Amino acid sequence: MADSSRPQPYQPGAVSLFFVAKAGVFAAAFWIWLLVLVLRADSATGLQVLAATGTITTTLVAVLLGARMALQHNAAIRHAEVKKLLVDISWNAFAAAGNAETGGKVVPFPTVPGDAQRPGAERVSVLDRGVSERNGGRDRRR
Image (cartoon, rainbow, N blue to C red; front, side, top):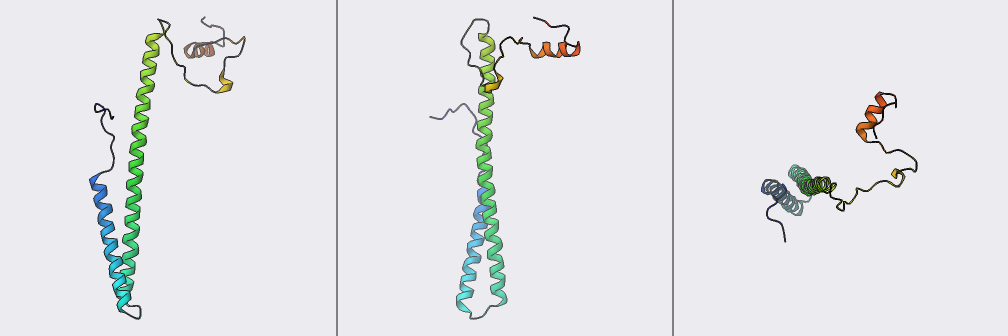
């Protein structure tokens, strides 16, 4: 069941669909006109060339607009998933900060295998690392 409290992500709608359908109708009309002209005449005429040009152009426009609408739809879905993921990450960080004092179970973020703490190496926070680099490594807080 969908959560109704969350706003629905933007998805291309009626305007995009209108232009795709309109281009499709024009393409179908040009195809029919070209078919009628080809079946009636024995030799190629200027009207057949015009109908063929219109057929090619409107078909390409319809395909491009349809592809653009599909890409916008997929991008909207991906954007909504990224926003949901960011909210989940920020909520986990907020919950982890609240549980740090009480010893609650916090799920750590995944790390690369070579990123594990080396034995005998001192763990220095990012803030302390900046101070120690400016002082030439002389002043480290513990």
